[in-house]
Image 1 (tube, rainbow, N blue to C red):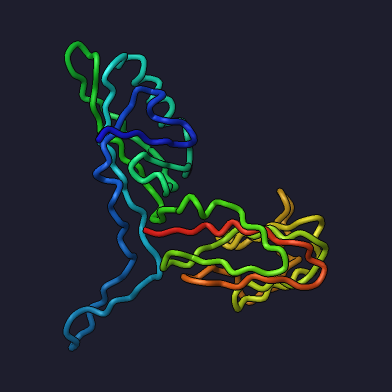
Image 2: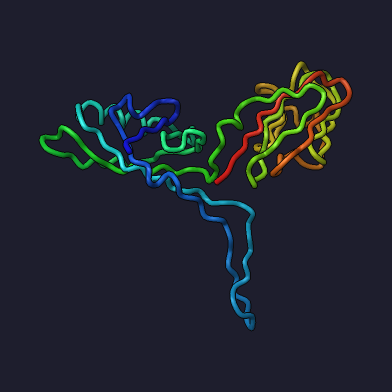
Length: 234
């Protein structure tokens, strides 16, 4: 089946570039260390509690207008720096954070009218669920359900002036809010725009959303809360 991908918000079809998707169903490697202990059979496994990056490779081709379209594709793919969003038509309900660092080596066909290549993206291990980007409004309290076995690291926006936020068994004391405050549980930061607000919160740890149900509520002078749960799997 011929497919396409979207990288950094731009679609490969706009560059005449199409793919097949056999490599899109692979899973990353768990980060573990094997330690050999003298006198003990087998290896001791030290789990670092994370997954390694994964390389996702698409067999790709351009069938017409190869000279112009391949130039445009090169400029597009090699322009982005760092990780950007990568989606494909084989897994439309998920996306990855990926970077393309090259090379981009086309094998041309008759009279250089078409060409084929392999596009390899260095991807973070998570496959993010697109529904996990939908912002959930919490008015008073709510129950959020994580459908995957991996703890999600949400982005939480709190409106009001001060109060106490409860996410599962984690209590976040907020001493001061200027209209709103974002609590990013991935980067472990609190901020409003470019303003750092880490000194305005107090918690034993940043909240996570484990598998299954998690209760959300708040007290004090908090008016409402919005949560982008960021569900993910591998």
